[in-house]
Length: 89
Image (cartoon, rainbow, N blue to C red; front, side):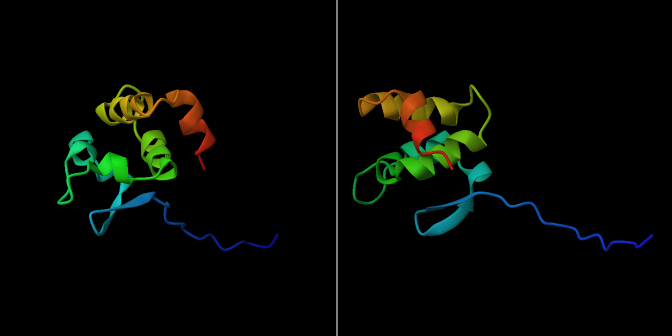
């Protein structure tokens, strides 16, 4: 019987670029998304729905960040389930 070589794969973590830095999705808080930048816009308004969907699905159900993203989707006139599922990876 031939032995196979085992390799250790590193887990891939999702990252998002916010305020010029690439940060892991797990390190982003709801306060980070609702904070205003120098131009007066909130960060959640500047991120695309694909990035918001990645952040949304990387967090636990019922967390503050999921509630913040759902509230933003409703504020824009979208159903959160529809818009986030359309933009999921």
